[in-house]
Structure formats: C-alpha cells, structure tokens
Image (cartoon, rainbow, N blue to C red; front, side, top):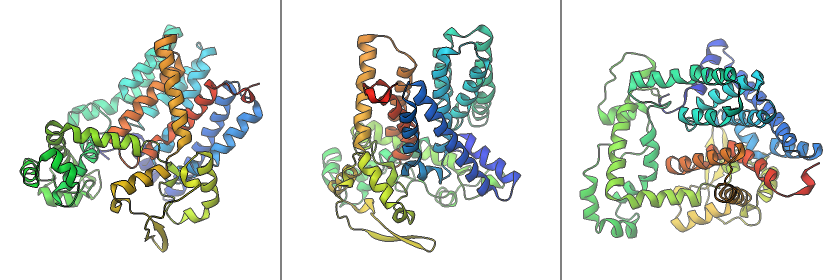
Length: 438
C-alpha cells in the first residue's frame, strides 16, 4: 500500500500467511492490544501519583467509552498507534528513575520503532529528535543500544523507498491526494451554482475560472480517491511491472505514482495562484473538524441503536451540544449488507448547516483540555524556560494536529483518537484537583 506506513500491511499480511482464520486472529490481537493499553493507562495514572481507586475509575471509564469500542472493532492503524504511543509514553515516565535499566532502553527503542513505522507522521527525524532529548543521562552503552535498535528497525523502509521510488519516507504516494482535500472545493467551482460568492471574489468571473481550470492536469475535474482501474482508464496507464499485486484494483497499484504527479500539479496550481483558498480550508478544518466527536465516525451504522444510551452518556461527559439538543437535519436511509440505518449526507448541507452540524458534534471537553495544555506549554516555554518530557509530548501533539488539519479533512477525529486519551491524563496531572492525589 503506497499510501500507508508499512507495519499494518506487514502485520495483516503475516496473519493471512499463517492462518485462514486471520480475521478472528487479528481481532483477538486488537483486543489484547486494547486491554494492555488500558493496563498501561492505569500504571501511568499511578506514576502521576493518582489515588489507586481514582486510577482504576479513570481506566474503566476510558475502556468502556464508545470511542474505544469503535476503534477496537475496526482494523485501523490508529488502534495500534494507540498502544505503541501509550507504551512509549509510559516508558519515558519510568526513565526518570531507571536511566541505567536496559529493560526500559530496549522497550523504548522497540515501541518507538513500531510507532514510527505504524504512523507516518512520526517520521524518522522525529524519532531521532526524541532519542536526542531522552538519552542525556544514559550510559554510553545504553545510548548505543537505543540508537542502533531504532535505526536497524526503521531505516530499511526509508532506504528501500529512497532507492526504488526516490522518496525518503514511509508512504511514497498519496501525499498530494490528501493535500488535494484542501483545494477540492475550488474544483467544485466548475459548477456555476457552487461557491459563487467565493469564486467571484477570487477569480472575478466564471469565465476567468474556466481559463484557470484549463491550466490543470487531466485529473483536475476527477474525484479524489478513485479505484486503481478508474485511474488507469482516465490516464490510459499501462503498468510497467508484471507483478500481480501491482496490477490489482487496490492502492498497491503502480498507477498511484502517476496519480500523485497530476495531483501535485493541480495542488500547486491553486496554491501558487490563490494561496488564500488553501488556507481558508485549513482554517475550516481547524474550526470544524479538529474537535469533532469521534464517536460519530461510523456510529451512524446499525450498531448505533444498540449503543445509543452509552453514546448519549459519553456526549454529556464530553460536553457535546447534541447531548442537549439535536438539530433536525434531513436524513436518508442507507444500508450495509442487510442492515439499514439513517444518516445525514453532509455533502448536501449548506455551509451554514455544516457549521451547525459540526458545532453540535464538537467535543467541548477536549477544547477545554487542549486550550489548558496550550497555556501550560506557553508558560513553560516563555516564563519557566525549562522543558521536560511532558512538554516535549505536548509539542509533539501540537505537531501532529498541525499535520492533521493540513493533510486531513473529515476523518481528523479518527487520527486524533490516540492522542486524546493521553492529553486527558496530562491535563489531570497538571491540574490542581486534590481529590486525584494520594
């Protein structure tokens, strides 16, 4: 898969080779990872000096949250990211008392490596920066072990892509397909009735826009994320290699390298001539999607009715407006297999309705948490002028969120999920809630 970091592909491929019942095995492994993640969350709470009962209550609440149940039952890389992230976070906390322990050095290097090849935003550069910040008190032997183990596990994937595809990264296609989400609404202006005011303000007239559009590639008017065979037909592309997988109708197909070239041309066409249109939609992602409640991703499917009371409770805990009032949007009947369910097609909503829809699903508890953490970080940087490992993690979360609002759109909540729980724990740690502590 040219669009993804390699670990999940390798993991699923290995399970498919080992057993014909790989789906059951993978789901079981996800459940084990989930259980271990919350065991680690309990231990993190204890390391933060929370009371034993409070630590247990926090762990149980997070474990039965609809968000947790959702991602535990979908084979997304975010759930694996969650485990590796929590384990790495726990190990870095333990390091304060165990600098000479090879046990923690080994598992830090392992969890750091697996995190970097599971989630491409944790680039190898970030990994080396992380190592640089934590090894100052290590023995020389442990410094060498940490750098060596990390380099041996992670660097081969970067070197392979550099040699084969001339790109130093984990994912070698899909970057501009993602970036194009931020300018796709500009392409919708080809419809004379869409985005009229904005088109007139930026391009002047519809005729000017038509002339601008002609500078684009053959894919300018084509929807994003088409299937491989659809792209091959449009581009009249013939695969150069005879590999069966590279000729399949999947995102392993080599046609996506050609797609990337066209998407890159269209993105920079818009970005260079009308950069304000790109930044407008980045702002839109920040305001409308960054704190969108992740429980509503896929919970509009049939299992939503079964979990309705739990979702309602989680809405109230998260200070989500829909807990009190739900705007009456027009819903359509959709189906998955034999199951039917009601859903809102946000693509058909007016811009004002989209704002209302996003607002009523906004997790305002998260908004409060992240604003508090930002104030805490700014205070440490500019007034205390002393950064510790918690500050580094907060800077990392900030970096991840910037990447998400630039490269993602409606699915930001799914990618944000692993960081929300740790941010919640850090928020509790820096707070002055006396009932939490011994």
